[in-house]
Image (cartoon, rainbow, N blue to C red; front, top):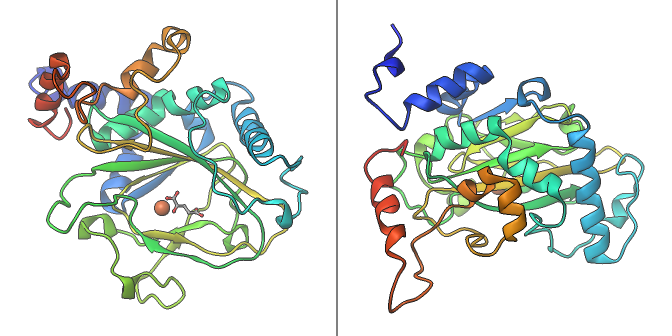
Length: 296
Ligand SMILES: O=C(O)CCC(=O)C(=O)O
Ligand SMILES: [Fe+2]
């Protein structure tokens, strides 16, 4: 029996088809059970050379914004990594960032977690050299208090741009099943070195996607290898959430025309009203519809 064929659930039925087409059932089960999954490059159907172009574009943007030369991340010294935090809003730096944001396999898993109305909210890089402190355990679903943990309110879909082979790469580490706690870590729960929770590391080849329910607790361990770890973090939100940047009305019309899926992914958030006296009425019904079904 194939329930989706009955057409009784218009929001989740098409997702079932996409999960089948792209071979994602294991990944959905891992998302539900553990709160995260790693999709290997061969499942992602990226265009040839995609991950090399993406890594190159991240390095180039970081060089340009910080007036430095990084060159090849495999040989660059840790000391070159800028202390500044200016890695957000990359979408229009290079079209490879659009490709990263609207990859159909990525969007299928994003929509599984955050519904058909999921909104692309921002991208930033992580460029990490050896040394430094661990990153404490946290949830990415900022502002979601205990009591609202039954669904993902946002998710993190990160492109892995250099191999994460072991703890030496300084990977993200996760607490399995912690998305079910439905709350942020408390201050006494954040210390990764002292935690009593069991953790597992993100191990993945360059070109993989790591995606997690934003509520899944995670941190990261210091890198001990030479060279740099490069990651593109991408956040997607349910339409009632505030995003890093409101891309609606703020992306070049040429880019939207070239990538129609981008227009859908950046969505048309209702709040805050762009005109407080006369809000755009066409945005009300979609947000109300999103309130009817976690897959809407
Ligand atoms: O992998 C890391 O270094 C931290 C990742 C993280 O916390 C995030 O992307 O939200
Ligand atoms: Fe995080």
